Image (cartoon, rainbow, N blue to C red; front, side, top):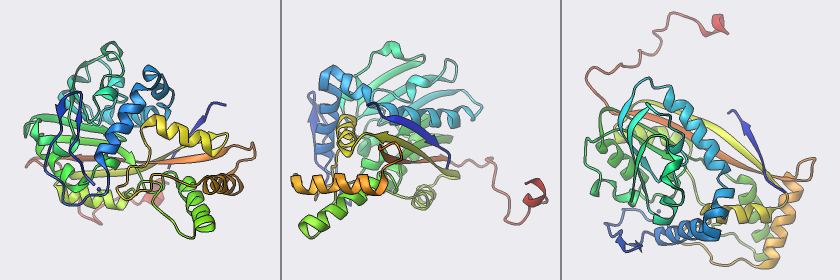
Length: 326
């Protein structure tokens, strides 16, 4: 039974890794939560499974988030000369860009296999691809070189998120824009709750099974601290229905989104899994008997400051009452 996509309105152990002979050695971030080598292997494995067919079948969440990003991107009425797509994967966002919106896009990703999964003929704008760990962005991307930097559902696996945001700002030209979507803190709350309750019941404690994620308020603060101005942060939710928890887990594996927390347990007892499946069904099943999985998407836009950039009006200076409008 195919998942049904329903759209609703509405910050890690670092390892040096190599892939396809390309070295990704770099300085370790100040705080390490995620195993970056494990994440690289997960993404490679997903992209190579069935010659990429398995990962193409589970593109639905990233494709929906990319469409939401595109709406926001096209609202910016300018043509961008250079755009950097961080954690681009096979190009979920870049392949949606219409001719004339940008002159050239540089797609970068930690996984060579994911980056080259799909042919260049899928893109309507000029695209180049380069394997690069986003945690060392400025090792390859020159400062003050990009008109725009975008990222679609990738930054939730970054160890030093504040540091990466600072690198993104440095890579942008003055009055450049950073536009991104990332998973928020309520993503997969149904799965997280079910696994935690099952572990407490069967094993007497809990372990990290789902990656910790950031919140909307956190992102506003981090963007501001990185030096971005004119911030916009909002939330959308993508809700997918599955027959059982097993299909959800398989899809997460094919997405390359399996757990990569450093202190994760590498196994889970069968009894615990069976209990989690039952709890999931009892707590969240729909009237149709399917189980929902919620993906919370945080969309963010920030600009690099310039002297002539428009400034927000002083609080309380509005001369129109919203009550009169609504």
